[in-house]
Length: 426
Image (cartoon, rainbow, N blue to C red; front, side, top):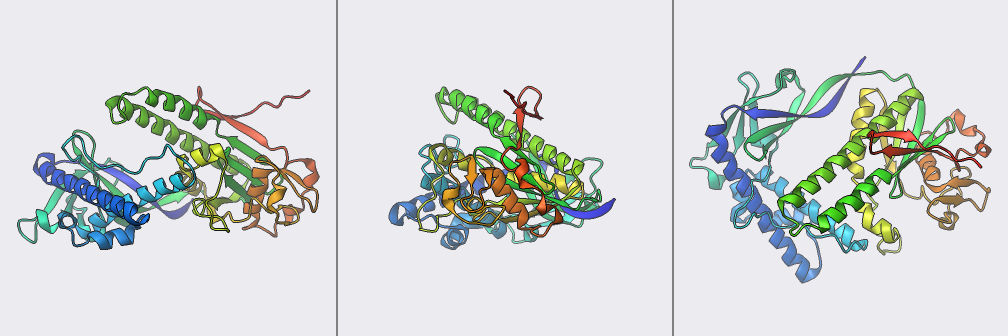
């Protein structure tokens, strides 16, 4: 076993709930009010000049607003950062043709502000692990005296000892519906398996096949979006039948859909890591999709097709990569993110780069060397070669069809697991 530092989130109950409930409630309401001020500001700027302000711009606009000082400065910055990210995600969907996408809304329940989560960064809290207490800073507007703070007595699970972690990076105060809880985001040292594998695998994430894998030893796998698309269709119909998108029924449906998607990501990441362990893989190379929302080289919005434009932003690629990295780390497998630029255009055999070689979504045919491949597998192999271009196994005979005929694993909604699709032979 080896030691490795990873990020973990620990939930803690608050033992002096009655003493701090009102003060935490005031911070939660303040976070909602600041969100709404920022929401109005973004809308006004968008209407006037067609621009969505980023986090830095939004903070500069509102730093002198009276609502900004209701929270500690770092807590206010986090609220505005979340708002800017939400607007950026909406704008990306809108630009890619998703007419169903709505901008982030105001945080209100009737005339009341809900209790939003409040994030305290390193300057906004002080942790006392000896007595299981944490001191949370208030904004100047909510203080009676300059030294006022909220002192929470917390209790974690018996197996969690915050005094042994490398460092608590953030504390979140979260309203669970009937009480406040604390979330400690920590860097902790854990025992991980020592991987003896030296092979690599490339993973291409997409909107038809959620993941395509190309292994160094010459086999490939596809994981279609059958389970997620079935859920998306089912819940879209159910939500359309709701009288109000903010109703309790709609909230329950959205939560159920989110839970099922999270289960899918957990199951898929666990399955892939287990496959890598069985195949002696030491490094997973995955495409970084951070540029997927950007314009193309001509300055025009990328077109991913009628259904692609609608579905692209609904799949949480970042969330899946986080889960995959966490599970791989526990097995001693390294995860490296690389740019996906040109991986869909280039031939993984000869390197010829030509967009027209991708003759349709699922087929890549090289006009130079004649290679025929599944387009997503070809992209996954290009991603893999960015980390392991000189592998001795790259000389594997490509004529065996592994590029063109990958194994397919489907998600079984009844068992909640992945199983290989049976091949139909004539």
